[in-house]
Length: 269
Image (tube, rainbow, N blue to C red):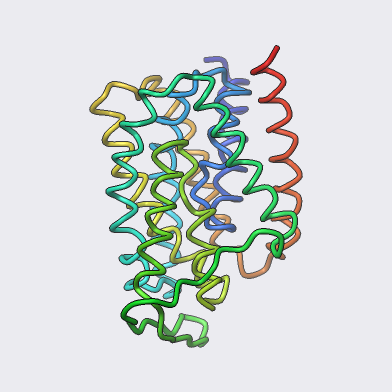
């Protein structure tokens, strides 16, 4: 690789890592389209690489948010444990699907995510209020304190949904985790922080599965991309409290719509 290519990869990865850590989405929502459209990986390899990159981004974000004491650990486990199992099963399903079908699923999910970012009230996840409750909370390093009672079935159900999205498309599952926690009345700053732990667990399980199947290639590219993404994730977690994530979400939503249009054109031409 030339120095120009190396710098280009690092810049793209840095931006992805920063956006992912601020929004708590794990990076896959950007990584998969970027790997397909910019770096010309086929869909399965793009998904596998995205999951491996998601491990690095979400772990970095998780460590920083843990230092800030903003992670709700019980909630992360109720979301994360089912996400692990469903992610692995979804990987096994994804490799058996036709490429066109998998790409159509990816486009459809990206459009749904874009809709929630552009207009948060348009599509909202319902709160499941059945079954036993548990109590969770924390007091963060900045003196803010939060606690509440939450329904375990709500977290288990939507954690499974996030695992399905993660394993099938490599999009991380944060786009399900964060709205699910917000529906349960968890403030956004705690929801995004907690989501990074859930995404880490799900991406780790799914990327190990892909590695065992031989779907993770281009290790030099992967190392470069992870380096840039981790630096971006560190910057994102440090500046998340100063940025207006609503404006970033809207701009990111418009970008995803544009990406979906390009992917659809490429698919049918």
